[in-house]
Image (cartoon, rainbow, N blue to C red; front, side, top):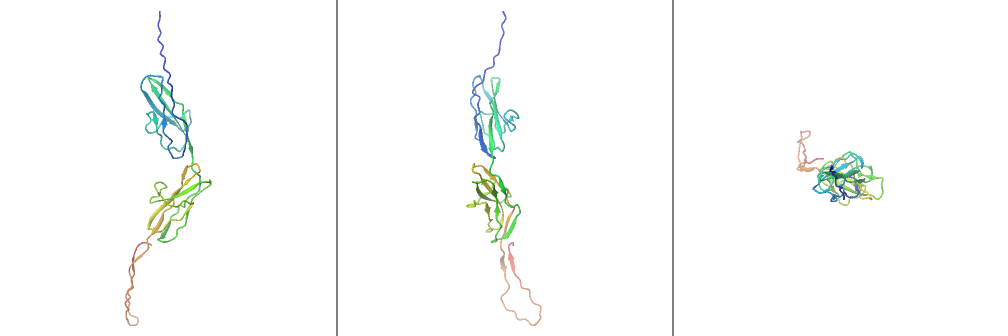
Length: 231
């Protein structure tokens, strides 16, 4: 009488990681919530994987914390597929991948001028202009002390394609605009050239108003005017 042992690996079931999503470029998708796999005994070890190649190849370890049942992915700018591998009791299975599609913001056909402008306080700058070929878009202008199109402050009420920089205060400022499409996705314009506002001159010394009597053709004292400021 001969006995033969046959090892049968358990079938892992309930191996799902959510449904496909579509997000605007540069934003993070919603957290992926994995199910609780069943069918085997033991602790479940997870590893999240991603691919920008396709749903069947190119998968590698997902960035960030990728060993939990749920996964929060970073902002995405291209179509990405996610999957996980779940290991229980020595058995490893892979979930079906889900796709995160990317929707772009409006295409820009005109950017703010990269050439800077310089004026004294109270002068009139040439307008900065952005444009999009798409309809139904909205605009918002931003000011920034750095030459960057991120981290600026929105300018209240400036929601037209064109914006004339203010010359009220001295200093150097950069400007850019955001363009929001009808799908809710946002595009960022490039940053403008430096907009320089120089302070006006403050007269600190004026010529004397006192009359001076001199003979004909004598050497005369200089008449002086002093001022502080840039301009």
